[in-house]
Amino acid sequence: MPELPEVENVRRGLEKLVRNKKILEIESSYPRMVLTGFEVLKKELEGQVIKDIRRRGKYLLFDFGQWTLISHLRMEGKYRVEPLDFVKQKHDHVFVKFSDATLIYADVRKFGTWELLKSQDVERYFISKKIGPEPSFETFDEGIFSEKLKKSKKKIKPYLLDQTLVAGLGNIYVDEVLWRSQVHPEMLASDLSESQIHRIHDYTIDVLQTAVERGGSSIRTYKNAMGEEGSMQELLMVYGKQGQLCPNCQHAVIEKIKVAGRGSHFCPYCQKV
Image 1 (spheres, rainbow, N blue to C red):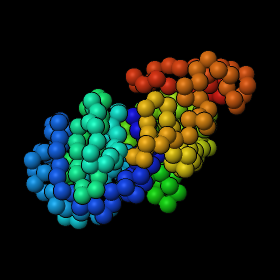
Image 2 (image 1 turned 45 degrees about the vertical axis):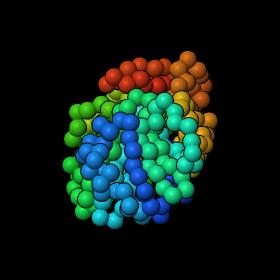
Image 3 (image 1 turned 135 degrees about the horizontal axis):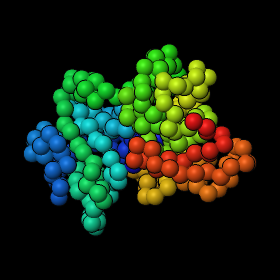
């Protein structure tokens, strides 16, 4: 699943490719992915100009002024821009036509969603989703983060994944953050020390910002809207490294276990429960 760094790089690509373009027509071979109704989307957005493209956590927001289209890529969603005369691919589902190009949304697994909201309702939408703050030192308050952890009996990995503590973390980067913080993924949030909480907080910001700068992680099929792969996978220390020697202690090998149903990579020597 694309995490915050991948979604941010998709956003940056789309900003270059389709910002300020006027939509002439919208077609879809899978209209069910538009949760607020495809016909409503078509009626309201044809003839409108994409004024801006923003991001909140793992969500993309296409700003049309009065309306905002919220897109979640889920597992395999992808955007690309093609000339007007192009060959449709098997998993292409939505076609947004401009005067000189077509924006295509493709999704192998059909898990991605679009929702059209009045722009005045967007903030309320994310409040209802309980999406946490963006991972920056300006927005991600360590004191509030610490208070929430100390009150919870959840294991730290699934708690970080549920998006309420901080927005944008997924399976790859949670493993990387916890390894760097020397915290076991099954440790209870309420048992974390202040120093462990501080490390998790700061490494969350550091890892995600580095991943944004590196264009995200192209481990399976991820490419940005420009068709480019990221390079953050070259800096991953623990994710996908099971059976390899831990680069920190050079003593134990990386193990992979299931935590709340998610494959989780850790060093049993550096990350003790």
